[in-house]
Length: 100
Image (cartoon, rainbow, N blue to C red; front, side, top):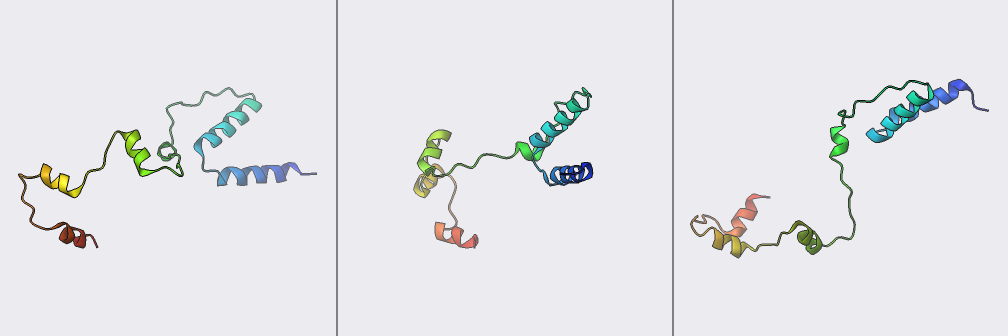
């Protein structure tokens, strides 16, 4: 049988290793409810790092992404045509060589 202290230590270790804001918030709310404390959490409290996370999709083609975003690819020649007013001092190869 697990002792009270062992449960506390395990719980503390789990909480320390947790990095998901929503998971910790749920644990916190559950503990408050179990102890009879009805403390309302600040809903404006936001974990900015968590908000920045996005789901990574697999097996999505470039064309599907372009279609979803309403964009289309453009060639170097089309860019050159759009910028006919601007002189091109260097060739594409020279520009790409500077990126190395």
